[in-house]
Length: 184
Image 1 (cartoon, rainbow, N blue to C red):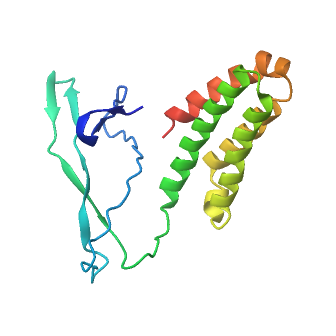
Image 2 (cartoon, rainbow, N blue to C red):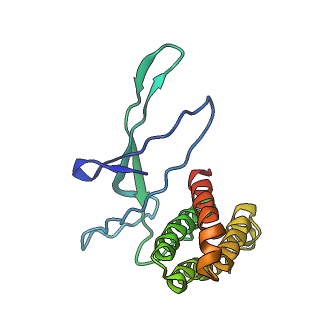
Image 3 (cartoon, rainbow, N blue to C red):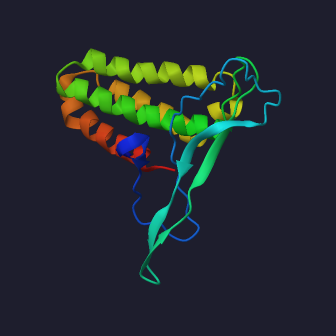
C-alpha cells in the first residue's frame, strides 16, 4: 500500500498503532554494483546507502506531530557474484505478500470467467512456496506458511465451477487476501 512520491521515494501509511507495536515494511532493492576496479576487500563494508527511512506520526497524548531523523540503510555485498541466504522471516513475509498478489490476480481472472487461469495463478504460488520451503524445515513447518498453503488449497478447490466461485470462493478469496495483507 505504498504511495509513490517523486524522486524514487514512497510513503507507507499505517492505521493506529499502540505503544511497543511493530510493523514490517518489505521492499525490493536492486543493489548497486561497485564500479570496475573498486572490488571490496572486506565484505562487511557497506557499498552505498540504498535506502533512507524516516518516521513521522502524531503523539496523541501530547497532540503534537513527531518527525524522526532519517535512518540510512546500508547494504554490504559479498565479493564477486556470491548470493547470500535469504533471511527466513523476510522469506516468510515475502511468501505472504506473493500469496495476496496471486489471490487478487486469481480473483480478477475468475470474475472474467477464466477459472482455469485463476487456478493457475494459485497453483503458481503453491509451486513457488514449495520451492522456497524445500530446504528450510522451519519455514515448511511455520504456522503462517502452513495456513497460507491450506488457504490456497481451499481457494483452488473453490474454483472448480463458476457457481462454486460465485457463491463461496469469491467471498472467501476477498476475506483471505484482506486477512493475509494485514497480518504481521
